[in-house]
Length: 471
Image (cartoon, rainbow, N blue to C red; front, side, top):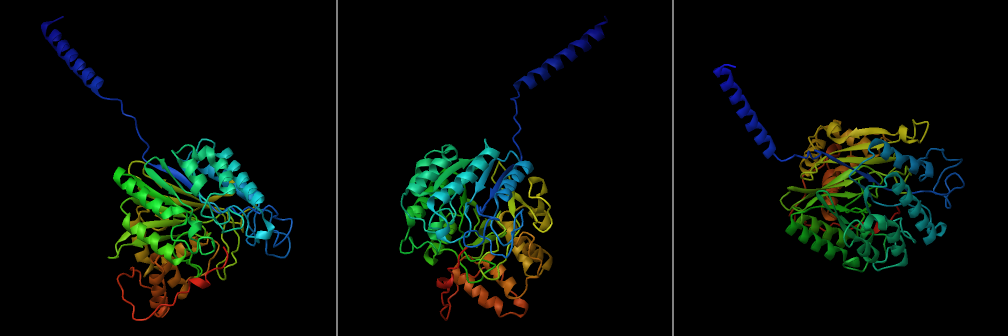
């Protein structure tokens, strides 16, 4: 070997050893997933007498037999509930967690149910969810139809609360102190991924719960929530509030607002005080697809609330509301910073399907695609609301999605005003003023921006006392 070749080989070997040393010093990098997924499912309303009778024993309000797969005049048969859960499993079998916001029994008189039958229904659905998603973490909360008599949740421990706690113990035990807190109070907190959850019992605030009407803080839930949010702020956590009955007013029934006024006001105050900690809010109850925006006193959007539609297609007793197609919702988020990136709505169009099996469920829409927004953060949803003022394309899409593809009618005039005021005005007084302002405009134009710091010359008569129809 020549001298030049030896020198070249030495240089090559030296370089190789340097690269080996560099590679050896680099720590092994584990690639984290860039997105996470979670389901939100709600309002199953299982009718165990479906097809075997009519109202009041069954929820069905129609002449003749209901459709086998599900019927707009009825609550859910078991085949529909089973198909909805296994559609979730087929579409996304490995979610990071599942939100379940209650309402499991049918819309029938209390005389047709009992505490044992309500518990049996909750047991059946709990076991179905556990069988389909045995390793998945759940955040379950009560709905107003998850007690007997319906709506009448006592703000103190009961045997029924304890029985449901035992059912949900495999889920609740995964979170420190959650099981015993839920047993005693029916609310709890849980940490999953980037989120700190506040699982609330907002039926306490519902105008149909006569056991809490004269209380200032049922079960101490408001005080507990404020302390939990204070601790989360100290610890740098991102909080997601989960409940069934939402604050604000129903966009498909103008005079139906859900919370007692004083509870609605306090809830809004908590959102405003802790909006830097609260990432988003997840609610249900209305059976339809909508959302809410909270603003500070300067009109800046500070928080958003998502209303997921129901599995039951039942045509509510509230006048003019109408039914919906059965539906479940899949959210996409960033595990790194908790940012909500998208939601996809999956549904079963009962007018078109030949089977309620899971394979018949399809995507109704993707929020970022349908609304042409970059994500589903508060800022993006607020920009979407801005387009509702002069862009019929996005509003008409929203209105079709509002009933999960059932209502193809055009929403104008008072309909449009009520929809937009419900989204942007969670405060009752501001909602009423928004309705007054919008209804006086040609074509039902509505002020999109929130109403803040207004001194009213006259008295807006409270109408919440007539808002007691059952849902």
